[in-house]
Image (tube, rainbow, N blue to C red; front, side, top):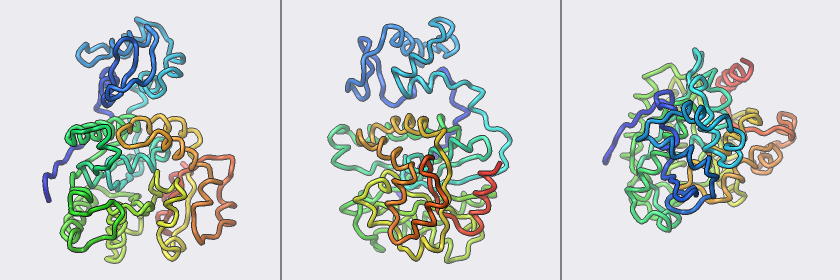
Length: 365
């Protein structure tokens, strides 16, 4: 199984006064904001003073910083984007109300759950408790990573920070199982066919791990990736879901499938959608996220180690239903057009008959 570690984190446990210092690998030097020692944008003297005052070692709280520098949140937010949003997120917004629903999100890697469902999580974190289960915890190495992070261990640390920070923003929980990703199981390329010789043992281990999590709670909804994009790990996780369905596992009636982003937003990956036979057996549910889209765009900026500069925008653009409709092969688009308004932004999920009822209940509350 390799070096397997469990790293639970509760968003509500993270103190507000340390949040700036938790931003993965950000630093301030000579009034300029840097990420991984690369210049991001110049800061005003006031903004620099604010960031330096929020250094973890100084134990200087956000409230104290506001008292010292005044309520200039709007100017700060517009200049710094995500940092402004984080700095003015008050503690009262971080505590879940009594939740009637428990939602489990099965995420292949650290980032997939948030890339695909951040809008849903942000929209309903008050009505449901979300738990993100990241199955693969080491680094899926690539030429993109090799360009910026010569040390792989450094990348693993950064990715963990990014994931935990996103959990804080969304007020949900994350658990990282730490199974080896495709390159470290012997797969040569990220989208090659599944190999029973390489993956059979891992499949059994993942089934055991997921069953343990399923037994810990009465999950009302369980989200799985559709495997769009053809990534070996994503298709392996989709196969896991199918195995639970074939075994008539009690929870499988409450499965919901999400569209893997950023892959689903790219025409180059549309041919990797699951078979029309599978999609016909499911019903699409359009969950409005127009009010959450700006926050999701800010959250995507957290994942600097994973996303190319244009990908956050393409993910958010995909939230418009007109963009989404063009990505579904051999599906009755007229039905979908009756379901969604082109004036809204959505995250679309695919429901079984039972999970559709629960999704409708969530949306109506």
